[in-house]
View 1 (cartoon, rainbow over the protein chains, first blue to last red):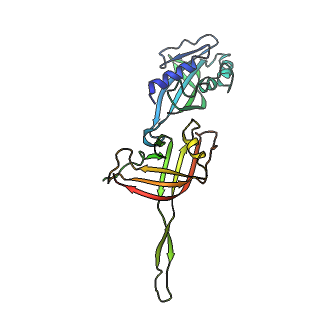
View 2 (tube, one colour):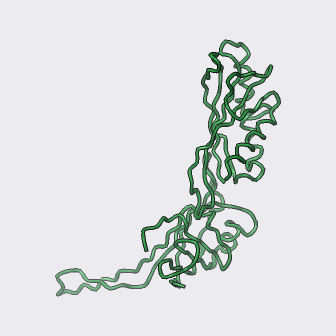
View 3 (tube, rainbow over the protein chains, first blue to last red):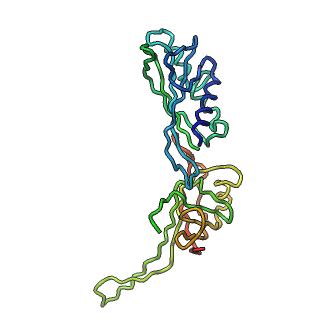
Length: 136
Length: 135
């Protein structure tokens, strides 16, 4: 498993969702697309030696989805589409549509989405943190 | 020889099918029957060794690709497969001996799924004709 390939693969999958802007890092200031959101693919936490003889490793990766300001009325509504388990805006469905990320890993699963808040440039945003488990 | 990690065991099925990368754990247990020969006049129990009843246990990640894990074991169900184990993948030597054996494929689990894990198969096979080699 090559972390840069995994991160690139996850970004590619997320970019299949229209209106979702995908970034490498949390920006100093965020410009959320109209009726959209920003996704940041985080770093990988690795557990080595998932299989014998360096066959594969296991990793988890966090994806931060920033939807809108805390006081924005439509932010929660937009979030529903991303949180859905299926549909054109579903983050889980988009990522799991290619479980090998173009051959970079053996398989993956989006395991969790946790609500939260992130402060960027002194502005509070509604966010969700997705956890992806990867094996490869 | 020193202490070594157990995460590099080579598992070879047949003569060429190395499936190590699909193995989560493997153990070869060599065990002999214990035959009691305690006599009336003995003051402590006495025993001799009987026949060997060894077995090999594998925790496998399943794969349905041609010639991969599922095909190897499911196609051999009811027959014997040769399996070779090497403690540390690489050159066999006096400090890294190989164990070759004939295993009766008495069971197989093609489907074993959970909601949060990869597909695995946990199997234990009786073993005969164990040969330990150092070269």
